[in-house]
Image (tube, rainbow, N blue to C red):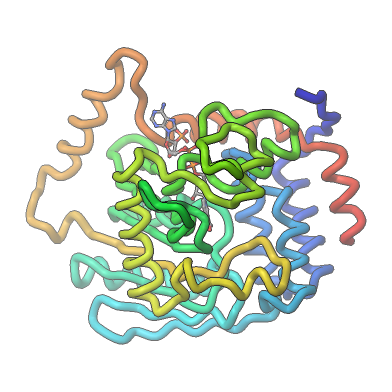
Length: 337
Ligand code: NDP
């Protein structure tokens, strides 16, 4: 692997840099603040593939006309438990910021509520959508579909996006349990990052030009045919995300999401759904004990760990020591100011 020159930045410095780049690209103060926060959290928690490295991608999506830097999203309550959003072709997180308080209130009122959003570009990890709900005492499930690049088991062409999903639940006396994963064996950004850093992937994550499973990130980027995790089981989860994400929200199915190519853009316009559940309304007064019991059975069980603990460790380290950022990336970002 090539040695990469880096500089350590504090989280505050990362936030400031990200915001400046976004403002320079045409976003207003409050929208750029929201997106800079997502970039900062991605750098803080890792993996860094969705952090500062994505800023040139975001800027390009504005300059090509693919995404709207001055979006004015709308959120409307269309049923007792359903909030429907239209992102005005901007970033999902801006629409979601308008929906969050109402979604929490609706879940507390009804026991369960959902926010769907179409006409939006979802950025970075889905844990940033589910974690705040679990911090508010709710169970949360978030999904977003994307652009077809995952081949169904036994298939010869991509049907699904990398279709991530995140689940979060509160855990008494501790941080919420939050897991967050793509339906592909490896997230696309991690394949790109491996290609940029010049190393192979730890396991076959896509098909090469001969249709064979490969660990070579460049070969996989050429075919853009990624493998689902867990063979047919991951493909089934990717199917679920198409339906809960695109179909419920009225977003574009991953197979139909070709607009991006015309703009040479790299972020993705999918449909998303965020479901919030209030366990206090489900009639099991011992809900928290059940969570504790399952977690206790995982912890101290050989090398097993609670999903999300890796993120929490990385978060504590970044808060204490800052984050190492490639100097090449910093120069690239400088040019965008
Ligand atoms: P990973 O495979 O790295 O991790 C998946 C989950 O498993 C994490 O919650 C991780 O938590 C947990 N985990 C990892 N190792 C273990 C272990 N040994 N024991 C228990 N739990 C473990 O994630 P992916 O590569 O699949 O996903 C990458 C990211 O890309 C996600 O954040 C996803 O939301 C995002 N994404 C976003 C898209 C978008 O359009 N916005 C599109 C596609 C992906 P931990 O923190 O503890 O390691």
